[in-house]
Amino acid sequence: MKSRLDRGDDLFILDVREPHEFQICNLKGNLIPLGELPRRVHELDSSREIVAHCRAVSARGSRRFLAQAGFRKILNLKGGILAWSDEVDPSVPKY
Image (cartoon, rainbow, N blue to C red; front, side):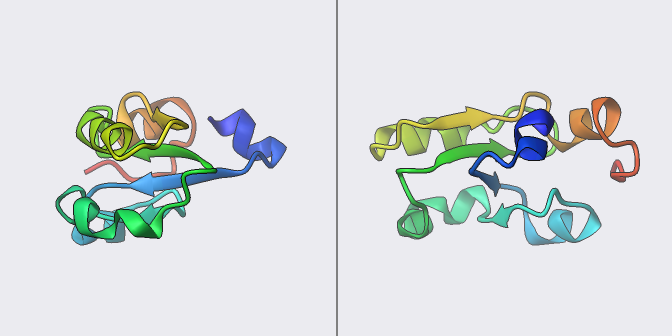
């Protein structure tokens, strides 16, 4: 994903963690906690590629929900923000 962001690809980064987690560290994405996703799904543009992420696991619940809601361009950030910190940007705090 980093190379795609560096290239300027039009990716919508969807952070499904809770607000207090987002305050600790974030990837400058868009925060919609997983529990709020059903009532806020209208905020998402189905024509854009969405990369969902959470803390460690791969935001599978959000991907399933979005697929059921008709979204087709959905990816997960494998390993979440912890993997991003380990593999891409060690300046991203781990918690």
